[in-house]
Image (cartoon, rainbow, N blue to C red; front, side, top):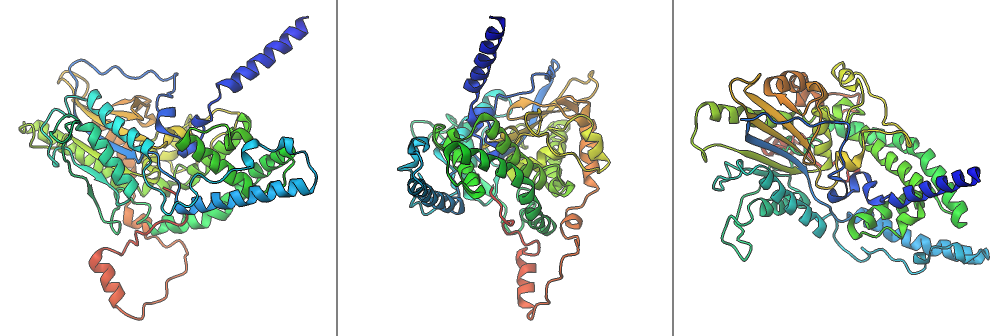
Amino acid sequence: MAVILLLFLALFSNSKADGDFDVRRHLSTVTRYGAVKDIVDNSFIPSDIPDGCTPIHLNLVARHGTRSPTKKRMRELENLASHIKELIKDAKERDLSLQKVPAWFHKWESPWKGKLKGGELDIKGEEEMYQLGISVRERFPDLFNEEYHPDVYPIKTTQVPRASASAVAFGMGLFSGKGSLGPGHHRAFAVTSESRASDTILRFFDCCQTYKNVRKNQEPAFDKLKEPILTEITSSLAKRYEFNFTRQDISSLWFLCKQEASLLDTTDQACSLFSPAEVALLEWMDDLQMFIVKGYGKSLNYRMGVPLLKDVVQSMDEAIKAREGNQVPGSYEKARLRFAHAETVVPFSCLLGLFLEGSDFERIQKEEPLDYPLKPPQKRKWRGSTVAPFAGNNMLVLYSCPANSSSKYFVHVLHNEHPIPMPGCGGTDFCPFQVFKDKIVEPHLKHDYDALCNANLDQPKPKPETSKVPQLFRWLFGWGNDCTPSHGVEL
């Protein structure tokens, strides 16, 4: 009886664990903000902000909200629909039992079939950014009590529609009720963008030729790295459903799962094909790719983000100067709000030293390579769903504290609106500003953007141009950095 009872308890706990599993929290960087924003490290105890400390400036670096798939990926889903029909036809010809065929396979067509454009901000993404704006204002009322002026609250975005639309949705939430437009009493506000040809602050990855070369050369190696995972899961699904699935089928079905779960809240179709253990492996595969091409996998990935880090620190220095000079409220900047991409937020998180394991910060300081994120079922901090979900963000809030404290100015770091430890500041989230500059920022400043991004990595030299006119145009219009989309980038 005891053995039977133990078996029953084991089965019950396993089924309960599966019942608690929500695939919408395991979609790597395709995860919606609301599904994961409140997942925090319970072992970390946030700092108590000392009495008398007041916020005087806020820096926000945010990713755009949930978006629709790009045209390229929509074509992939169209191809998947065609291949599913072929698989069913093949099963009938082989006289296999169609009872194993998932019911949704029979009439499935891509929800994006016939759509001519893609990649735009989805209605769910609009809501994410709007609510984030409201949340930021409610959390820091003293920072947003001034009359709006673009020099007091500059909003900056990349020249990509989903990023600029995210900035607009955020601003509508931030300034809701502050104007006279419509029943919501909205007000007009400015959103500015740097030219794609020269945006080294928010699109540094597209202006860095060295990075683009390295990333392109990495792709074959990464394809080999994920091959065993796809092969293993392809074999499992082929046995489960008796279909001749290919690795490409599994890759496309996983992509479909992520789109259905994130955009449509549908988890009983493509996602139901995979067990929680298989989802964990596929999620790890995506997280690993993010680590290698956007994160700690190569120091170039984040060091090319130094212009953004400089911009953040400069804004804080200017806020302190205004404070010390007793400038009149409304005459100086109180928040700098930026909206970009995962390729921006992930490197910036790395520059701050977030999501590191054990002694990794010391290894980063010594410019040593880091180990890959641990494979499931082992636990890891590096998860795309929390590092850079849709609308994922970092906020650096500058505080002014009473003169009798250990330091007059502190930086409070929040990730997805929650305090997060910084290994470079003794594992705290509330760091003296000078320590923040000395320990976290200064080591990165020895790396010059132009030197990093124009370095000769033994690439073939371009052929000399037959005319000096194109060269002149590049010089005149800032085309020298060739800020064109990186190879295969999905922002």
